[in-house]
Image (tube, rainbow, N blue to C red):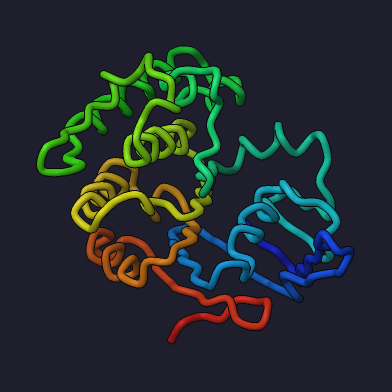
Length: 245
């Protein structure tokens, strides 16, 4: 049982009508107790991979598998099915502008019709976990104190913590994280990774795909994983993924 793409190719037409191939015959899987990091230059296809695995792009060749669910094209039913399998952290800070912080965090659990008791317990877990984050020498961040704020009024670092909390609300089997922790300096990244591994059991109770440009991320994750997860890095080369040696 795994999250997979099988011989997937994807192209699109640019503004001039010229077809651009992004992925070619890509086969990839994310299985139990695995963390996979994907590197590549801008435009290589990293975010496209996330969107394809999440069932958010149509007109691809090949097949995508979510454990026991297979699909070749997107459909209206995928939105409901997706929440059964995965949580997603988007690189563009996708959030609901008209909702405050608390409602943005709760949204995945509400959408997937989790019980109210689960939502309340999970929300309190987020507030407790992200209650004493040192973002700089002069700023200590407490998520709960921002619960009624509009996200648009927050800094990138503060918003990224909100996005992490939202990603973690559903305790999903698969986590897809595009440019996770990009807003933080090294010290804050290490705080976040310690939380993700110790509090949310990254790579043990879930499997994680991370898109990143940070070459140190493999080293950091190996340190905080303490050998509990299989961590592998890949590079986008020639429109497919190659494992780093």
